[in-house]
Image (tube, rainbow, N blue to C red; front, side):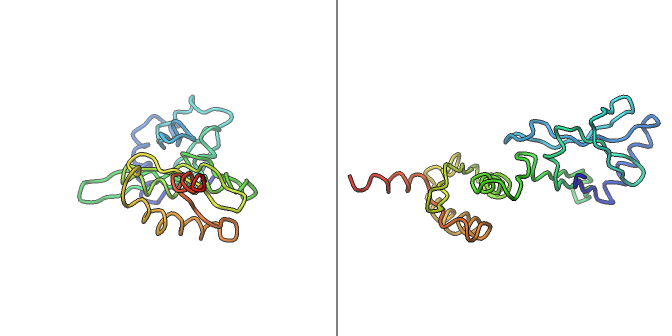
Length: 194
């Protein structure tokens, strides 16, 4: 069973829209480019003849939502809301796992750290035009990361790493990760004794 949350406001919004559609029309929730940095969550009308046998059917208030097999794992914990503010009303779609499918608890430490970076750390850095990539996890349990985008050569990078990312990852993986190192520092450290 997929955990797609559609708020009551959004459900009544879809209900009103569907009243104006041909009988038997429902909605489809999907992800375009799932598992990539360009993943986008979308919603469209789903007439009866567009339902695939492999779709998952979710029942909401007054309508059904269909999710295709490929999108399903990427919509884990997705939230659809309908918010009204000064700018008017708009549908908001949050799909924290669209860029990367949820990893299982028994996945390797590397996979789980990568997942947290993609779903929690990078969205925070995106506001600054930057992102980080996980390069490796060393034998002594240090995650080696590389800054990219706007973080490169930014004087705040050390502060961001030490106060933000390292703290976040060490809390998330306490007892497993021992440190978080920047690849530049790591590379410098490796060759310092020549």
